[in-house]
Each structure stands twice: as C-alpha cells, then as structure tokens.
Image (cartoon, rainbow, N blue to C red; front, side, top):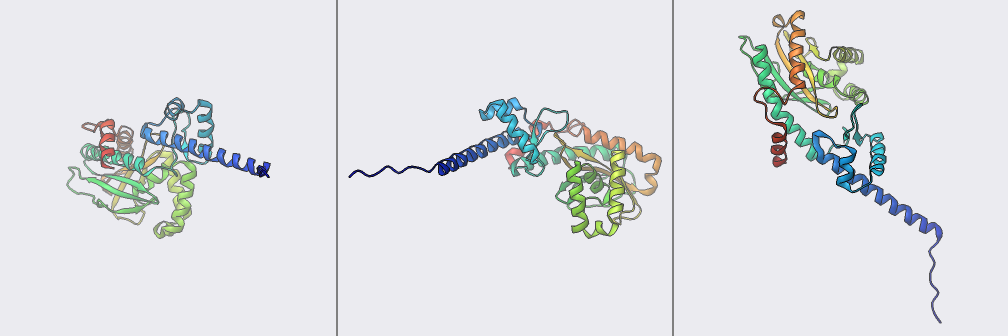
Length: 285
C-alpha cells in the first residue's frame, strides 16, 4: 500500500518563508554595511552602494533608511553620502581612519607650535576619554607641558577633552555626558551644571578654553574639535601656554588658527596626501 505524502502545514510554510526572508534581509543589510565601510572616510553614494552590492537603488534606499534609524549608518544633513554609524564602526575602518588622523594630526601639531610659539597637542577620542598622541613645543621660552604623550583625560576636562565632547552630535553628546557623570569621578565632582555650561559655551564659540578644571594650575588651554568626513568627532587639536601668554584678547586669534588647522588638517604644509595615508594605514591593519 503506497505511503501517503506528508503535507506541510500552512503555518509552517509561512514561518519558513518568513525566516528565509529575514535571512535575505540580513544578508542585504550586511552587504550594504560592507559597501559603506569599504568607502572609508569619503562615504558612499546610493548609486555606489547599488553597484557594489548588485541591489536595486530603491532597495538600497529602504535598507539605508532603516539602518539610519538604528544608527548603523549616518547621512549628515545636506549630504547624499552614507557613512558608518558612530555606534557601529568596523574595527578595520575605525583603525584606518584613526591612523590617517594621527598621521595628518602630527603635521598639524607641528604647524600649530610653529605658528603660535606655544605647546600644541593632538588628542584622540576613545570612548569616554581622550588620549594625547602627539605633542610639540613652540619657541617660547616657558613651556606649558600640561600633558604628556600617552596621558588619558576624561572628555569634558582640559581644553582637548572639552572640545572633543562639545563636537559630538547631539544624541551621542547627551549620552556621553550622562555616562561621564556616572563613571568619571573628576567630572562628577565638577557637576552636571558645570559640564553643561562649559559644553554649551564651547559649542557657541566653536572652540574651548580651559583654565580651572582642576588639571593644571597657571596654564590656559584652547582647543577645537577635529570633525572627520560624515560628522564623526575623532578628537581635538589644542594649544597650551602659561596664563599670561593667553589673555582674553589673544584667545580668539589662537582659536582661529586652531579652527583653520582642524578644517584643513590634510592640507597643511608637508601634510601627507590623504589617499596615500589611507593606503598606508590599510597596510598596517
């Protein structure tokens, strides 16, 4: 007697189809993320992503819109390019961009020290802190060596930490400020009102001034955030000197030099070519 063919329940069939559809969506989303990640600091256009992934532009647009809502991708206002979200950078791309920043930042630090005669610093933002990765002294006789290369400071403290914090996008900045007040005793001691006031002032001026943060007495620091392509704030450039050398009238002048250096970090004299630096960085990963 022939065996009866087993039928698949309709609910099970729908569940299988739904599961397969979910796997397909994950695969497509992963392909889009890889395409954007491989584009690096230049970002990727919708057209570029579609060509790389083989997906139709409407599909790419729908996926990108969903991933922007989840902060996996970012599309800064007024731009058509997509960038990896700050909460979802791949280690390789993040390392590449940081390496490129450090290469160019070292040139910027030398430029600032020569231009101002003061001590210049490059700070890299990592989590809730900034790390001093480069320092160069100017020709002024009294050196303000407030920070050593390799020193860590919480975001919000010191000129570099304050500038890097203020440069973050609003949602991330609010979250980071809350975390600092919980996890960094030095910031908690100064208080939420102090932190908010100084961040707002820094944002209004587009540069920070630090004198009384409990780090170093008798030294004034001025800093501006380094904002990479797509709006990611990777760190800050800073100039420090004894208080007498940076009176209120001089600070604006120094701040303009700093902002110029941050905005043109790849174009300063003898700066490495960004594409060459990117290739070098990839070889090191």
